[in-house]
Amino acid sequence: MNAVIIDTNVLVVANGKAAAPQTTEKCVVLCRARLTEILRGSEKILLDDKKRIIQEYKNNLNAKGRGFGDRFWQELVRIMWRQGGEQGKVIRERITPLAENGTDFEEFPNDDVSLKNFHKKDRKFVAVALAYQRNNGQEAPILKAEDSGWEEFRDALAAHGVQVDSICEDNR
Image (tube, rainbow, N blue to C red):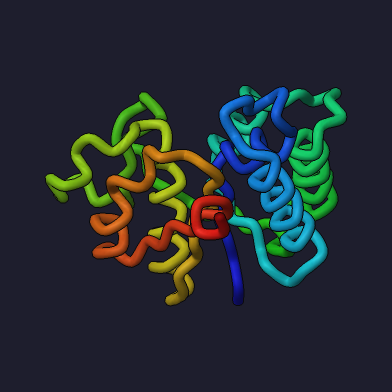
């Protein structure tokens, strides 16, 4: 089964230069193409069981917006609603919070000192990747656009079996 986890910056960049002025037009096009490929293809979209990722999307997108990333998120919500509790296009992985702060999870490699300064808000994506790997025996990459915060931790994450795929940086 092919599955992916989509970092919020992919959806924001897909909304265009007005939403992400630091990005290139090429990156906008690449993010839109990749999101279209995901919706039309057989890849599954991984989220967490308590809708933390969906909530982050909601906080960074416009529910009534007409941007490409907005529309992708709206379609994702529709898919989840139609799908109910079944596993279909969207798979919700259970991740275990260590505290009620929404950033610390049992699945995250908390004992790895090289990940000590990894961005707190992105830990849920890593936790979902590792929960999926544990439950299915398969890796699911985390897709990002131009978020350099992931780059300094790419090797440390890879040591735990977490692959970070850059939609834009690898395609310049």
